[in-house]
Image (cartoon, rainbow, N blue to C red; front, side, top):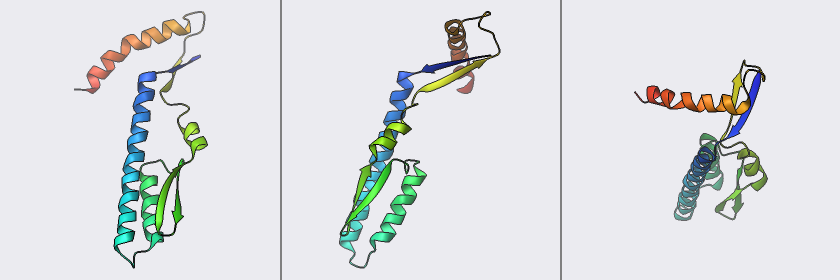
Length: 126
């Protein structure tokens, strides 16, 4: 059995763009929450913080973002080490095969996989 590890830089860039879109979306929610807190005297920071934490969890970015409160203003901060850990495997994939190393080397297996891939995407687009 052979496990072949590869990284697709195009897919890694797409994942990074998606991550940035999610962060921008959450940033807009933070801005909206801050405006709401300023406009409504009786509004509670804890309630807005709860909503923002739920949104971060929904976007699946809660492991690398954190909210800080200064007075009645909520700030969005990025935990850089956690973000680096989350993005470490962006674009990576593994090919597993039952073939032995004598039957085919890693490059040959990867080339055959690439030969099959266009046909698979054509079927899935039907």
